[in-house]
Length: 454
Ligand code: GLN
Image (cartoon, rainbow, N blue to C red; front, top):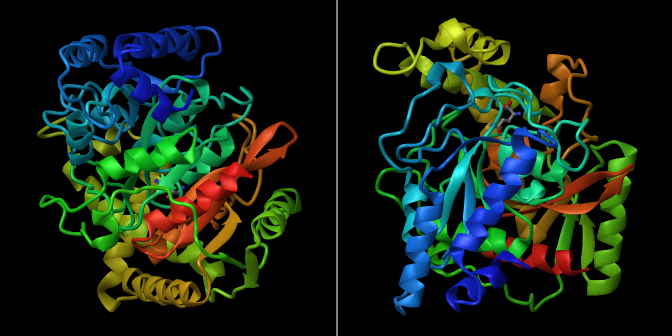
């Protein structure tokens, strides 16, 4: 049953929110630590069942309930949920409980969504495999020997394993889309500024966005609809016409022009995406157009100096004085590499050599995308250039960084992008991204839904 259908049933009293949440708690009990040991969930909300009962009670009394009534949601460990341990999967913040709700959590609670628990992730959202968590690697529910992708590893794995209806992740350079692709679920990275970052512990503040993971487009759209919009606590957020509208997935009235770029993924992955695009053209009468995005091949090199500097700056508050431990004393190698690298780049920055230069290239890439969207409705590209590797396989840092080559461009360009399952290679899901211009989530999701139906 889809989440949308389930919420309808709960509202109609045909099923209870309590049953829904208990079902998820049982699945977590069975497979998160015991059984399949997926390790996607770090901690549970002790009030989840009583919160569900309160919603059932209101439904019984005929009172109005919200858009997410009774839906169970798992939240990445870098998004603050009041009284739950939001530790960024790091020993730095182990045992730290958030004193407040992030804006997205306030909105979810207002619409009667139920927070089931907190998801595992790569430490401080640095990485891309789910292996850098201080609390153990998350396994890919589709194949337990493989990484689930990251850094929203636990969020994607929770959706794929049936631990929740919906999950929240964050995406700085692909962290929602990459694990969604590897776990065979939908992952939506909103345009920069579409969703408030208030209460998100930042990785790199000029790229970070919170977004939904779900089993289908319609439910991802529902959660996006709830969390989007202007927030006085985050000055980068906006409300424009597109975002004031409720995201209703309408049938696309016109023939879509799909932009494709030169192949950047391995052959197996690329051919799945190419076949899918051919199917769209054949079955939906859409057209494809070859597009050149200049400098897309230096996206990774542009992204990392910015991330290193902003991450270094953002982590200065973790000095162990007011809360937690000093980050340099307890964090893992990837976090330390970025702190060290960020501090060196900042020192050398007096001539505007690195950070400022990278920002200039970011701007050029952003304009390249803006021009592309004057010619096409969307771009369709693979989410990852290859297939998930085996847990524990040794990978060079450069290889791991290069793995984000197809997701980072959307963060540089500030546009929206959604990953949807496109096919299977040797039993492993392969995702593809549909990207649209900034603030065009409604159009993007409508296009994605047509593709999902094929
Ligand atoms: N893998 C990328 C990085 O390590 C993206 C991480 C993210 O989106 N949070 O920076």
